[in-house]
Image (cartoon, rainbow, N blue to C red):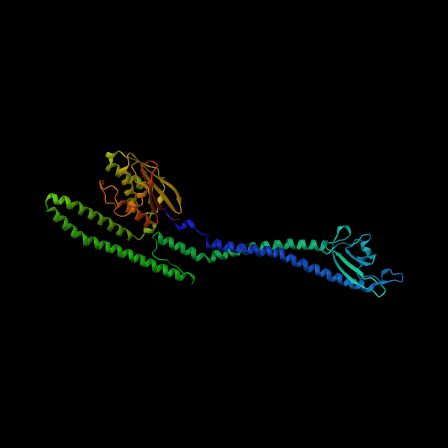
Length: 445
């Protein structure tokens, strides 16, 4: 079956670069979006705790025990928020079962622990620092807790995070757009190269022209050298075929003249062989001359039109057999095969079907796959055994020696198909005869 590297096509370089850039930007954006707010939150909490430790030092310096063993704070604290109920700034002292708290706590206490967090009045989320210290007149340590409401801090952090995400998103989109422009600009020489290659393929130019970056220029030079060598080889082949044609023409003419002087019986034996020799020489010289065409890469041929032309000729040659050819091809199907080569391929296949079909030949197409179209020619004749389908594609193989032919037809079709990176596959037809599947390339855009 036909194999083609197009079937395993990989993503373009441009798409690979853009996908890699997008994935990297997404990873960086998500990391920054989650890590930066976390760092800021940690920093802000540490700042709040630093301030709370200052308050703690102040309170520790003013704590004392009276003659009755009761805790008290001597003097006023520097921050008046400690005196306003539910102000968001609190302190609490605990000595054994005795508790002394700031006026801001009013009738509540600081609840919670380090694992689950702390909660203050009106379900306020608190940042708490604690310290234990002892006084000379106390047998028990004093536990001091200073707390501040972190709701404002969390709200500020939320607003900051929202703004950060907006900035990161805009930045990522901008970087991706800039990357797209950079990739497109960097790959512009490759697009130019592709355009030049199309011009060469279509026969408008014989070499790649223009200035390219230093990384690509060596490739351009090598391709131009290869194209020049290819054209030189084609020119040499064409010249050699012409020389060979002239060299063989005279000896064959002499042989024909000598055979014409022989008796009729000997002529009948030698004339067909000479005629067959002339036909093979004409065919292969024609193939060599065709190979020298400069625009062979740009060739295009209408498939249905050639089928109609060949079937019209075959209808006259094989009129006595009463075979009908049904052409089901789309009229606008065009393939990238030179006209004479196409006629050679489908002519051999259709003539083979006319020879063996009982009454019907069907010609149709299958959907385009990997840049190739499958041309199907099948008949209702006796067909070929499955195990012999590959054997008949070999040079000179004939399954029926009684039928006129050289055994080269299917081999020629197979070789021509491979020269166009196509394929020929023979199987049994649903009509009962032979089914020939000829895979041929379509013109590239």
